[in-house]
Amino acid sequence: MTTTIVPHHRLRRQGGFLIATRYAKPNHLLQKPPAWSYNVEVIEAMKEAGVNILEVVFGDKVFSCPLERFWRHARRHNRGWGDQLFLPLQYWDVRTAGEPELPQESREGGSLIAQLALF
Image 1 (cartoon, helix red, strand yellow):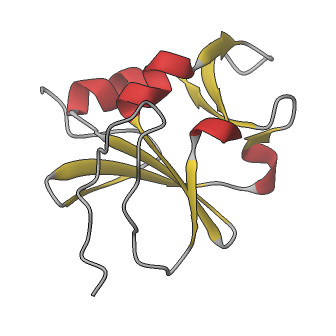
Image 2 (cartoon, one colour; image 1 turned 30 degrees about the vertical axis):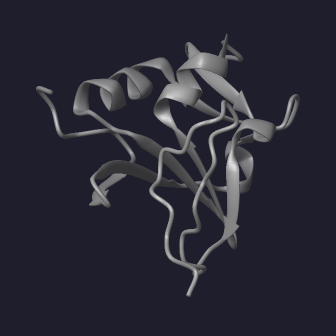
């Protein structure tokens, strides 16, 4: 890891993971297909910084995804804003902002975030 800066994101450590959070506006949501899109350079900066989890805060929702899942399922596109990678919403975990983070099961069978005690 040679950098700790990721453009347009707030980085924080939580539970041993480095989380990169961005606050999205309505025009940031890709419509066809519904997806979150990132400039390739930003995703590469996240990888270099050692980011584990991407978060997108959008209205009252928080979308999260392990960076490894993003790399595995993202597709490349350029719609006039430079090369970007997008990941359809079906691959993101979603919770309401303000809710405590619940255990997230990976869609590939593992868990990236440790399970919290329920009682």
